[in-house]
Amino acid sequence: MGSQLLSFINDFNFYMFLLFTLMYSYQIVYMLVAFKTKRNNHPVMENVHPYKYAIIIAARNEELVIGQLIKSIKNQNYPGKMIDIFVVADNCTDDTAKVAENAGAIVRERFDKDNIGKGYALNYMIKIIEREYSFRKYEGYFVFDADNLLDENYIAEMNKTFHQGYRVITSYRNSKNYDQNWISAGYALWFLHEAEYLNLPRMVLNSSCAISGTGFLVHANLIKDNGGWIHHLLTEDIEFSVSQIIKGEKIGYCRSAMFYDEQPVTFDQSWNQRLRWAKGFYQVFGKYGGGLIRNVFRGRHNKFSCFDMTMTIMPAMLVSSISMMVNGLFYLAGFLGFFDGKQIIQSTTMELLNSIGWYYGILFTLGFITTLTEWKKIHCSGWKKIAYTITFPFFMFTYIPISIVALFKKVEWKPIAHTVVKSVDDIR
Image (cartoon, rainbow, N blue to C red):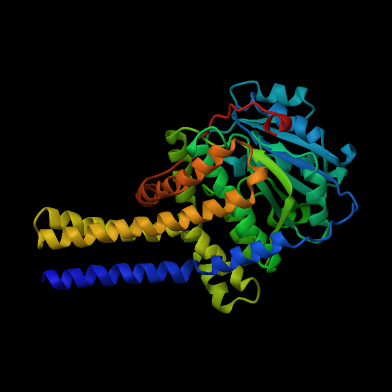
């Protein structure tokens, strides 16, 4: 009995490792493509026709930070008459609306305790723009969170990619508070990796990128065809990306358009936010997983992008969690004496340590490479860049319990307070 169990444990862990490798080995190719692209100098596109944009900011109790975002928009190297700023003060109990209006934005207040979430706020403002400002004939909508800051060339650079024909474009996501602690740095390092080692190679390989919460541009005709902003799952960004990719849309990436956002710094905030993300990913897979998988095998467009998005919304951490849960259960059974305790405990302990070692090595490598190549764009001291590369895998490990809890717990959207009041110059 004991030898059969040991054989089962060894086989199980081998097949889980093989599954993980098969699912995500294509991202090694992504990294090689990114290296090659970064090494080559590509011609800079000259200034192109300036398109007219509406900038939408959904804000809830953001009086501290929204003024700096609007100021960074006003300071863009882009014709001011071609952009208008719209703020939806969503269920606010502070002076967000007043601060935004004084800074020069067109503001509308929304109070709805039943339909809570960014997607509802975006749709509310889009309908107002279509009803009251259609004469402005906007060709695209930018979407930002209130804590964001824009590099002064952000809109001009996004405009160049828009001119190439992309109807959805994401951008380079940097951090306002990378140096605050290991949690904020963990977020920031992952977003840098996502930008340059996922979205960049996707763009180069003519695959589809994915938007990530904020800092993106959508063609007005696409929003009109959809009937507004119709995505209201817990992760409306990835839901939007997946739904458009299934339809055949290719989402672009503009690496020269940089913006900054604020990351959580307490574990409680981080847990709640990432629990929502994990639950939202499960929701998206439940709603769109069948369409993605069908498109992988029978679709006419975006076959590989559909596979890529399937791997994105079925997180690697879930596979890791299942492996560790099974090994943990066998360890517990051995400890309680259900089986030959000594052999089971030794075997599962070794497997758990091996798994942790492998995953730490992989995540450290990802973090190290990203830190090295983005070194000059990460705004903190050198020793912190090195220290947070070491802690990055531990930050990612915390996704394991989050992924497990999200399977069973009901999760609702909760606001996160933003308090880092900085200008772009302050960050630099």
